[in-house]
Image (tube, rainbow, N blue to C red; front, top):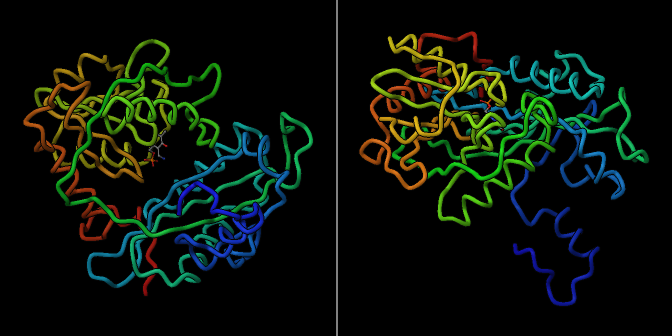
Length: 329
Ligand code: PMP
């Protein structure tokens, strides 16, 4: 499907085709208390715009287990907890307890009868038509759980070219990056557009102090002389669960991991650089600002982490079963 309206197409017929679903979508999503058919889950056009400024969301993955017995939701409770934390900071009320959200995620997986790796997006937005531009505190929210299948990159040969952005990462004093708010992604998107324009894949954003923060959808780490360094959680980053998982797994593998301020030029001297995120998984960085990292492919430690991460999320590892919520087929 293109963005160009078809010849003679009316706005309504374009909308009809979107609602009919000329693109991949799940049969069911969860909306404010129950499963609803995807095509019937519309809202009034006036409910978008300013309302979306206050919307918060999560990104969760369910991986097919290594033995094919079912789906394994990775760190479900921690993701849901972060959704409440985001809502708390922006002062919107999610009118459901965590048990209901947990059940909603599972209901969505079951209703769509997924037998592949699935990405889940629970998100909350102010209910009704927001008349007030600023969205007052305490507004009641609708909660949606959307989902789609994805192709995991774990265990595959891959890499990306990264570039330090001319855009500064949003910061605690204006738009806290700790909040997983859709509006924060305006910053990451501008940086992404610039990176692509200049022939790179992804940007790396520096914070207001000129130190490395993160990518637009993932945290970052570097390896230099065998030591892993990653910007601290006060460097203007989302408190990433993949970052936390990576730190845990790397330490278990016997590596030293330091959370600290990271300079841009450390990226130029690093033996390895990689992104970490639910969506991006462990993504090796092969060039930074055009300078090759290591031999230009994933480094040994990045590969070790990639394997360890894959083993955990697919339940192949005997460790960290407490991070997994099992859903047998
Ligand atoms: N930073 C940003 C800006 C992100 O969007 C994400 C993806 N959620 C991450 C970091 C990584 O967070 P997590 O590992 O919890 O997915």
